[in-house]
Length: 151
Length: 151
Picture 1: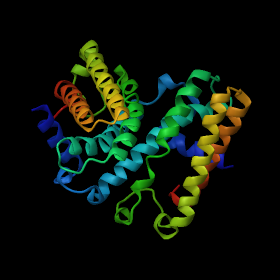
Picture 2: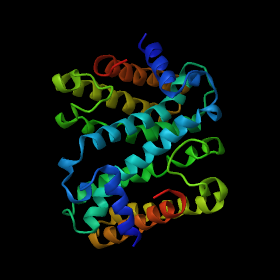
Picture 3: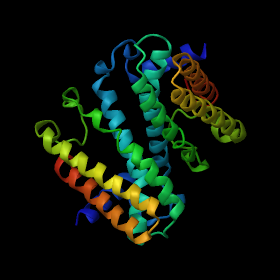
Picture 4: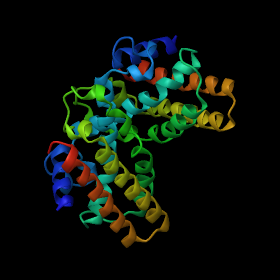
């Protein structure tokens, strides 16, 4: 009963027929919503680290450990949300996302590398190293937003 | 430069002044957006598992492993997004979220337990056990939505 009710709700939320289609047919609007959700959560967990790195809030090693672990996973979630089918959906994505996929992929890779280094720094426990790694993640975010997202 | 530009953008996205305030002062609208983003991603990664459990799409052990690992982390993200300050923000949350916090917490715990069991089943690699665990996660989702979310 719950299962049916819930799945019906899920299908409704994602567009009629979703639950019966293959994943390649997920509605473009749902893909955009999902990729934006990933970005929203990346921001939720990255912003405190950026503020710590800038000395605007106190450094908290527990928050660093938790947030970097979350970011490690969240960083993987947005990139399947930019197929050609989403080109016409209103969002902050610039045409370059679809026109220069190699450069877009490179920008994603830069972020993965930077977040990987942040995770390693967080495990190392050196505050200076963490703050430097946070700066590199910030640069990777900014680099991609500069080129692929409307300001 | 990038850092300033990005953080300015972040502050704008979350409400003016966000970057200079403590986290307890994050705007209620931003908290709702963040918790909804977590739910959107929980759905993104849970729905394929639910469809596999119901035999509507083929079972794919790699997707099971990846999605359960993602869900393990995502399941932790929404619950700090329901403070009293968000009571007046339009969303699907029913008044019971704020009126019966103990029962709401219990519903969250039920999900944590069910997702923990799903992660264990995924590691065990037994398809039947995974499908049963998916059913229990579905029940936990449905139980909470029935009581705390407008249908």
